[in-house]
Image (cartoon, rainbow, N blue to C red; front, side, top):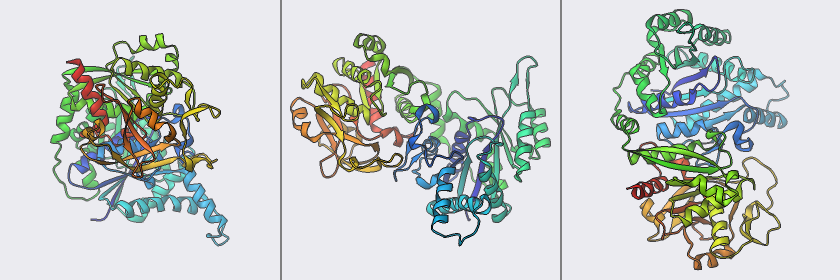
Length: 535
């Protein structure tokens, strides 16, 4: 069969979890033996989220090909267990940039460039390009924002045109809405959803499926009302109740027969789903045998989405150990005083120091790492976390009191962390760092080699700075092991202290490749060590 398309929009309010719903549907289709790809269309004018504040946008997810993308791509990859690319995240900024560049080159032959057809054609071309690249049975396309937003109108118009062009039975629209609950009357209210569907209709799109986010069960009479007023089949009104874990959502949608409804609407033969492994995963999530107290010490802790892949990777490692991970958010700025740091780290069984940029909170991160090293608390450093671990070791073990990074002090005399050579002439922001998947060779008999079970690995990067090779010999003599290096041996990719239960750090971001049923080796090693200590 040719590719079938599923467009997902949201109404009533933002942050309804369209990405989780799309990823969960993708999981259900994969469980039936279909191939699935997902695209995220973001209406903002930024070309990509790479230059956006983590407090505004959350995590920047990096793909194998080096694209800085929306965090929903992380959910897509984790649920569907697939690797996506630049083409899977499309923004208004990238669309307008392409169209303007074409206009400057004269590719429109002097025509007046307009939203319709030039912008909408470019949007549709991205759908076709993703289809050509992945050749999936099903392409799921999520439109960011909320129906009624001015920014998303070109995308909605492009969808309308696209559905018309490919014909009935080849594309459907899924609209996600909120059913608010009024405690005073004890009712779920359907009117906001009806209004949202009416707005979508006014743009020329009639949704075939309505997914209703709710905190309470959806009564049959309310489901019938939604079906009647929104012109969808009753079995296409899907209840999506709040769950304790996002990984329960696929099973909840399966109970609602959502995949069966989708296959019927898209005139595709029904296949039975094999969800046994996912059911076992959810069983472990619901019934943990132990609890672990794990800290994430960073500077963006006020918004947990800023570290969402780290959080999920920790949970994945917990599931493998039948353990519930209690996340303790430690603001690194609160750890600048070492005595305060010791107080905050009291009772912590493992700690992650994640990536970030800038000097704010760095001294606190160094104190957290020092505490973990001196007290044998299982530690994992990621990107900036590894650089901080090298600085801390240089200061407190090697005795270089003024060891620092050029990122934090351009005039520092002992830059154990320095700007990469190929970054010295870079002045632009956005997509200019060392990005994407690179090869790494692991040291024989190292902790890292044992964790991965192989000599060569491929991991995703997002950084400008690296360990200064001028200090490597002295650091190694002082006991720091550089267990992972680039193929030419010039870039230090991993460090470890084998005399501790788990003290490992990486220049790359392993969190991007962790999966709920297949936790990343470094996160699993961290949690394995914490579990072993707890016993």
